[in-house]
Length: 289
Image 1 (spheres, rainbow, N blue to C red):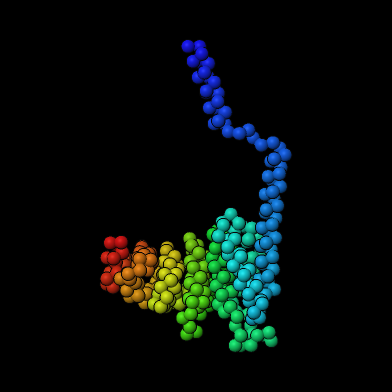
Image 2 (cartoon, rainbow, N blue to C red; image 1 turned 180 degrees about the vertical axis):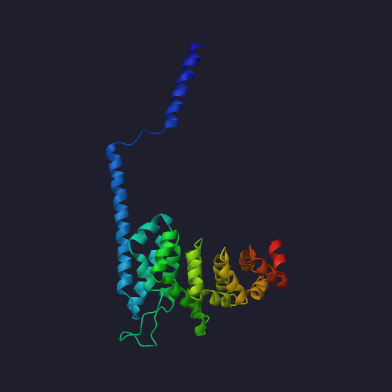
């Protein structure tokens, strides 16, 4: 019995050792790990600083500048996909540099009116990066304070140039997505979007030929309508309900989903709008969803 007891105690001791895992690292190993982490952070900060500097100095229509700015915006967007890095990017002053590239450079001696390399693509990348950075209220406000909203609303209007190219569709979609992220759970910015004239253009885009643009516009309107009566009223005044009713019949599940979301937010706590939705025949599909 004593032998069995001793063996059991030995097994318990071994189990405790396994549960505890390996012994803590030595001070030298901890210092090495801390140094490696610091070096990694320094490298990241240097990379961000380098891309921001490229954006600052590459604001022209020359092909070299446009290519450099496009790549810099892309690198910052890829980094911003990691939320743990977003603060570092914002602290690296990327926001004003990206906001500047939401607009086209003025024509200059380096490029004639006919030469427009990477047209729409730099603006698209900048809008995408800014949308990814807008994950905190303070970042949302910083982006708006840098002047992004009127520029994003202008990007929504790029389709009016008569082109239905992939580049135009992409920049319009990214602008709508950025507005969605900026206005997310931010009543003040929702109001700013209305003041800047974003709502009529977004309603117009609900009928755009490209389905991805339609979805992005509906997603933005869904966010803007949530708990904002003035925005709700303007969306309805822009005659969005008949368009949304048609979208409910779409075979595209994402289009249907976004239309349900917009209508649901419009009728919430708004009896008058609810009556209009009822008369348009759009409420039942929302209830059934």
